[in-house]
Image 1 (cartoon, rainbow, N blue to C red):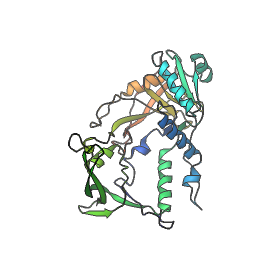
Image 2: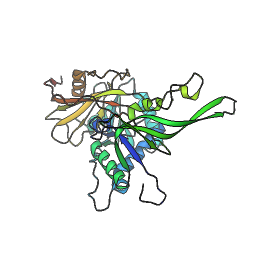
Image 3: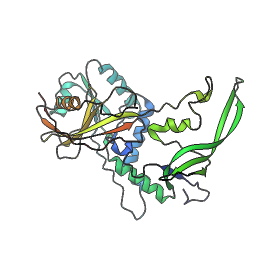
Image 4: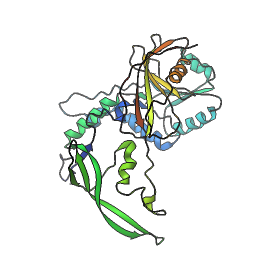
Length: 341
């Protein structure tokens, strides 16, 4: 940023410099193009290109090359008869956007993945290229290292407000609109009661699941009815849970990130019989962060897709998503063992 003439000075204000509460590093690290919206598919295709050519973007001269341990093992969606039509519609959109996806009948699915129980599966969708998972911590570390090498400054603190000037304008319909231009960001340093104004030309709201809270500091979502400021930034936290379980005789290299029609999902973690998985929760308020997903449901639903394979839960952790930025809780061990019928 400062390496070129007339470049900008960039400051990142980070309240969690250890990233121990950052959902980025606590997610399953998946990447897929199997979406229903073209915009999401296009963004993910670029994301896959970015990962495959990551050293062109994040490599630093005379430093070790970046390796985020990208596993292109694909996503595998299983659908019941009820959801087969939607899966076919999504498949057409994905192919139109250039995604490499294949539809599999139960017979084809069984042939390609003999370890899968195909009972109640009417159709499957499998990502042939550019899908899988990576290590999100390694990606975050590489992004941060590259930014620092380009002169980006990091501040350990929290944004508490903004100083701005208000300009009233009139729309083409004759309605008055107040525009606020931020010229200073108020930053409170870590372990300090004092705040410091930081002059700026532009502000990027990258607060993840709490982006709407930051937007409220400038009045977005707090305005009078009928004004632009009335509408909140539509970003809210959603709690998510990931469980790790051990299945000694489970699938190996041929294991994709499998998403069952029930909402349960899992993928392998390495090649030692360890797997991580979860269950898509109901869209409920993110204000409560107690353990809500049923551990038994996650494991049993996953085991139903594994022919007579025993699994044992080893750990679980919770995080928030929907562009989230905070984690609640650490690992806690469990002593539950379940067997598939």
